[in-house]
Amino acid sequence: MKLTRKVLALVLCLVMVMGLAVSAGAATVINETGHSYDVYQVFSGTQSAGSVNLGDVAWGSGVDGDALLAELQSVYDIYDSCTTAAGVASILASDSPSMDKDTDAKNFANIAAKHLTTKTTTIAATDTSVELPTGYYLLVDITELVPDEDGVIQDANNPALLQVTNAADVKIAKKYTVPSSEKKIITDAKAEADADEKSIGDTVTFQLKGTLPNNLADYDTYKLVFHDKLSDGLTFNGTDTVTVTVCGTPVTTGFEVKTTDTCGTDCDLEVIFENIKSIPSTVSSGEIYITYTATLNEDAVINGTGNPNEMQLEFSNDPNWQATPDDGDDTNDTPPTGFTPWDEVVVYTTEVQITKKDGTTKEILTGAAFELTGEGENIVIVTGEMYVAYAADEKYVDGNKYWLLNDDTYTATDPATEGIDISKYVNTDIVYKKINNASVDTQDGTNKKVEAFVGEDGILKFSGLGVGEYTITETVTPAGYNTIQPITLKITYEDGAFVYAWSGGANGAVASITVNNYKGSTLPETGGMGTTLFYVIGGLMVLGAAVLLVTKKRMTAE
Image (tube, rainbow, N blue to C red; front, side):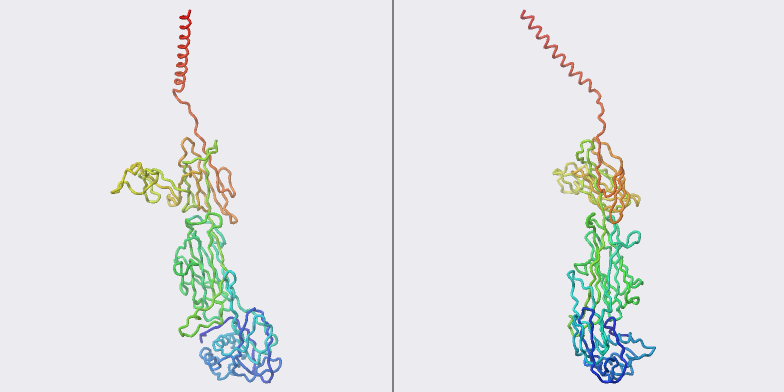
């Protein structure tokens, strides 16, 4: 028959065999768990010195025997013929090949924990021995699990333990495991990584992993929640991208997915299993995998700390917990939970910088424009913005036309609009386009390009690039200078770092280069010598006039 309430994990059970004799019993407890326990007597009886055999078995002072027997019979057929505590004890002690003592003891402990009355004593975390009257006892972990400085409770309560007196040293040990978790990035090569590179606009696949405890059978229900947080540079691609695999089997039911709107301020995604045991494939120590995708967006951090993404697993951690009756009090209706530490992965993206200079004077040059094309770009962030005149058949970058105003600003308001004062426009016939941070066009569905002007500081940055091969072409050359040859750039990602190989030999960690432009040739001017002769002849005529004047004066004087 189906078990209606399973209380905890491993049951440390010492076999009871019916016997006779009268003696005081005692138990020496060695507590290796660091936890504290309340002790309840389930059976009373008699024992001879040093023997675990329990005679004259009766219900102990720690349980409601009638209620315990009634539930045992409603759940398990093996107790149908029992009418007394001794009958139940004989079932637990049976050596029948059809019986599984360990399983029967666990199931018995689970139900006994629901019908406890008066505790016999408490074993503190620091106790090494305790004196108990003769009998059979249930030990319930009452430790309050306290979060560490990071708010993590990576521990659980021990399941209820069955112990018998006169059993020499009784060791109370942790017989359970707690879940663990980890997060990975699934790379393009299908490998699992803690860090990876992407271009802005790329899709990133994340994998969340959680393990189940080895004592899952001791829980009636088991809650598991995957909490996930994305940085500002990552955008969740929606619940349709979430896949769930429980213990090797893909599942589509038995869980709930929540996003930022519903899961609170401290997460962007939650996958909630209110009771993962309801999923048929669930087994103790099994593994759960969650995958989903996100997009690296324009808010991504370039280089530096990258764009982190972290997860934490929340899990049931008290197998002894029972909900309060339906009495209107909701304070104990939610099972206590523990947490694994946050586990982080990072997505990196990079940028390259061009500094424009006069090749001779080494002074900064402005007015140059470059176009970047390549396989590794989606959305490229460029420095600044600029407005340039263009022909009517050119493609709008942001869907707008612009006009220059008298105050040197630009407006997208068409001067032909009714009521507009066209005197504010420098020239209503000249239309401009804006080159800004995210101007990407697709050509032939494969190659992409982005164009931008060098800023007033002579610097242009292409940000948000991932691994790939690129060509940087000068499309506007400062007046009087020769256009440079196209620059080729190959970006790779090796050992967690970007590596750059530029045409011309620069490579390694160099993410910036200086591009020199040289002035064109100074050509001779036609008519230049005629002008010079004009000035020379003119000068000679003035000199001749002066000589004639001096000569004339001398002749007059004589």
